[in-house]
Image 1 (tube, rainbow, N blue to C red):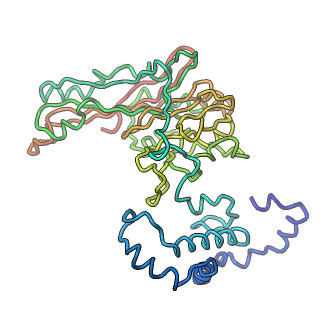
Image 2 (cartoon, rainbow, N blue to C red):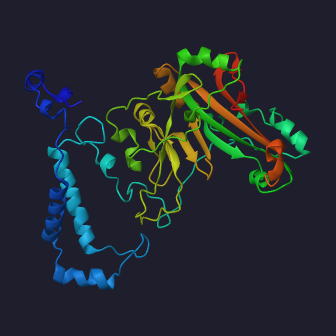
Image 3 (cartoon, one colour):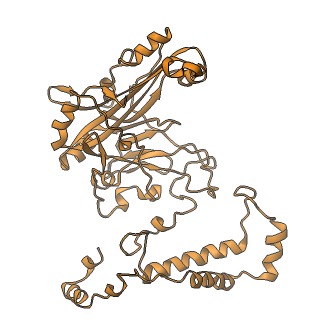
Amino acid sequence: MLLGLLSADLKKEYQRLQPLAKYRENGIPKFSLLKGQSWVFNRALELGWDKSLHEDIERSRLGHSHGKHDHHIERIGKKYQHIAFAELVGYLADYHWYLDWDSEPRILSQLEEFDRADIDATYLSGCFSKPVQRFLPDNLSVPQLAFFPESAESNIAWTRTLRDIPDLKKYLIQSDTQGYHWCLQHYFCRSHDYMKGFNSSDPFKSAQVSIELILVDQAEISHLRSLATRKISENNHDIFESGWSSYELFGQRSFRHLNNAPTFKLSKRAVGFNFGRITQNYSPKYNDYDRSGVSEEMDFYAPHQALISELKLRPKDGWSSLFVTEDGSPAFSHTPASLGGIAVIRRDVIEKFANAHNLKIVWRVWVEKDGGLGTNHSSRWKEQFSRRDFIGFFFDEVGGWQGELIPFRD
C-alpha cells in the first residue's frame, strides 16, 4: 500500500536500498513504552497539573472509586493524561509504523481503529436528547409462531416435520404503499412461551425461526439447487454468526466519508459454498465510560461499507437507524430487539449492488423445533425430548422461488 504512493524513481530506489530488510528477523523496532509513559507524565505537568493545586481535591474530595459508575467527576490529572496520550499517538502515527499483532507494518490512517472514542458524538439519540427514530415499511408482515401441545409422543413426532411452520417464502419480498419492494434482510422469532417447555414438566411444543439475506456468487447457484436433494450434515458456525462490529463512528457510515469503496468479500462459508454478509453491527455504547445518555440504546445493523460507498447510502440523520439513498429515499433499516429484531433493505438497492458484482441474492432460512415433555423430567429426559433443525437457501428465479427446508444437524 505504501509503495503505491511512491513515484517510479523512488520505488526503484526503495528496492535497491531495502531499508527494512535488517528488521526481518526481529521485526520493526518498537517505540519504548517507558519513554512514552515518561513523556505523558511530563506533558501532564506541562499542561497544568500541579500537586499543590490538585492532589488534595483529587484524593480527598472526589474520593477513591472502585468501579466505573461510582462518580461522574473525572480527575483533572486524568484529563491531562488523556490529552497527552492523544498527542503522543499523533506523533507516533506521523513518524512510526503501526504494528497490529502479526500484521505487516503500515501507516495508521484511521485513529478510531487504534483507540476508539469514549463517546460517539455523531450519534445524537439518547435519554438526554430524544428517542431514536425507527422505520419499517407500510404493510410489512413477519411470521408468527404459536402452537398447541399434545401428548409427549405426538410432540416428538411433530418436531420431525415442518407442520405448523408458515410458508416463509411469502415474507422474503414485500411491497409497501409507496410502490417500493422490500427484502427482509434479517429476522428472528420464537414461538409464544418459548421457554415454558424448558422450565416445566408439561408436554410442550416450541420453535424458533431465523432469516438472513446473504450474497452468493452466481456460479454457486447450481450448488444451492443440489442442497435441496440431500441432507446437510455440516455444522458450520458461519451460518449463524450474527455479524461483526466495525470501529467507525456513526457519522462515518456515509458515502460522503468513504473515499474508496471497501472490497466486499465472500469471506464466510457454509455447506460447501462461500457467501458474504451485507451488514455490520453498530453499537451506540462505545465503552463502559460512556456517559452520553445512550446506556439504554440497543445495537443495530448498518449496511456494509461497500454498499454504503457504491450505492451512496448515508444515515438519515443522527437520531435515526434508517439509511437513505443520496436523494433521501429510505433504503435500509433495522428495528432491533433483544433477539435480533427486523431489518429490511430495498430490493432495487441490493439488486443493483448484487448485479454489479455478479452476485445472487439468497435467503438463509433456519427452523428449529423442540417438543416432548419439559426438561424437569430429568430421569428420562432424552427419551422425552426431541430437537430437530431444518435449513434452506432460497432465491427468486424467473420461474418462481427455488429452495427447500431440509433436515440439518441431527
